[in-house]
Length: 138
Image (cartoon, rainbow, N blue to C red; front, side, top):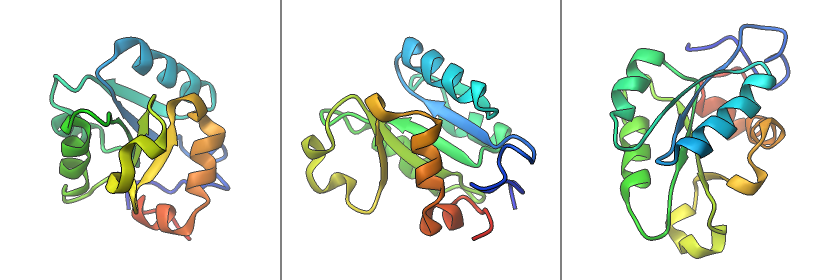
C-alpha cells in the first residue's frame, strides 16, 4: 500500500503524495501551491517531460492530469500511469467544460480546473471507488 492516508485522516497522517501533470507551468504552480497549503506533498511535471518516470520515482497516491478535448496527450499519459505496477489514482482536469469531452470522460474521475482545490479532491477521495483505486482503506 502506497499510503496510510484516507480522506478522513489525511491531515493527521503522513501527507498524501500528489503528482500534477500539466503542460502549463503557471497551472502546475498554482495547483501545487493550493494543495501544499492543505498539507499534501506535491511534485509537478510538464507533459513534455517524462511523467511516468517521475511517477515511478515519486510514487504518488494521486495523479492530477491535464487533458484537452483537442489533443490525446493527457489521456495517453493517464493511461500509462494507470498501467504502472503500482498505479496512482488518476484525476483528469481541464479548463474546458466536461461536456466538451463527450464520452471520453465516462467512468473517469474529473475535476474542472476552475473547481480544482483540496475540497474537490477530498470529495473525490470520499468516493469508495476512488479510495480503492488510490489504495486507501475504504
